[in-house]
Image (cartoon, rainbow, N blue to C red; front, side):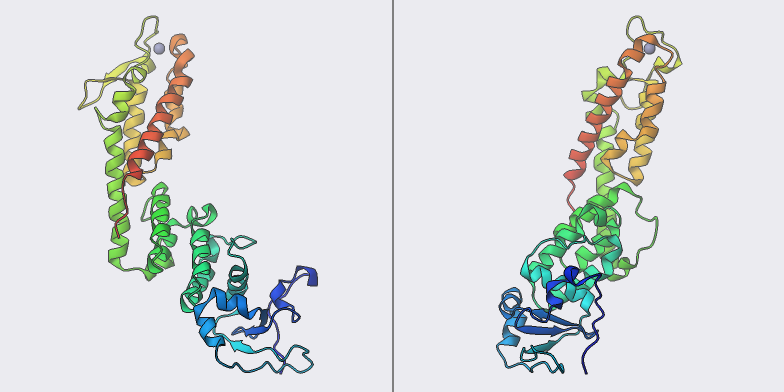
Amino acid sequence: MSPTPTITTASLDDAPFYLDPAVGDLIIRSSDCVDLHVHKDIMTHASPVFSSMLSLPQPKSHSPGDDFCDKPLVDVHEDSAVWSHLIPICYIPCLPSPPLSASDLDLIRAVLDAARKYQMVSVTNVMRRVLVTRPVVLQKPVSVYAVGCVYGLEDVARVAAWSSLSEPLFVEYVPELDLISVRTFHRLSEYRTRCVAAALKVTAPAGRWENVNERLLRIGSGSGCFSQDGCQIVGRVGTSTLYRRCWATYVEKLERILEQTPDAAKARSAVLLEPVIQSAQYCHVCLKTIHANVDAASTGLEKMLKEAIKEVVLEF
Ligand SMILES: [Zn+2]
């Protein structure tokens, strides 16, 4: 009996090439009975498993009324959704179009499983690139970390671990955590702890940020400054540097945030910077410089934090 294709397309023009029976010299029949028409030499080039399989005689397809039934037929265990990603990559190893998203992680795993089974290196490499695309890794960094570890994609796991820093670690359970051992999860947690330490070293009293920005942080105490409350300068425990009060508050709040989320971009968060700018609104002297100072000090801090956190290596 003729298989019933489950891949549907709006029009024949939009149909992928492998659904056209006139294409190729080999049929791959998916587990949901879709016949996929491909070229033997492409498949053998992409997959050593196909290469050895096709070196043996294969059964011919038997679709009544099919003019192309002399093609050999290979039954596979994966469904057409998986093969619709495998086949184009075997032809041209580029990112899928339309792009895969974070909600496609189960499909990405199925494609990686198939790539492993058929030894399709080009497919694994494309999925590796898919996993670190921003819409995927930024949306589900912990899930991508788990997938990266399970499939031995250390580069993916590293990007995902880095991407996870912008959110607290224990916010929500993700099913991909079931794929990894407690030890592998602990590795992520331990990496983040070291990132926190690296970040706090930058912001610490007498730390790098303070040293570089010493003059800038106490600005407001100069001549002509109204020295109202916002312009007062204060000391921080552990340092002789004097801070404009609002900068001292800023850095202390930032440190509490970095303890949970060691993400350099937090240094530029509006919630933290707005009070610094507001502090100068009643002082015509500081008002002239506050925007430039806030920009310089926070941009500089973001850069320093990024450099310090990048030095931290995820161990395998
Ligand atoms: Zn002032």
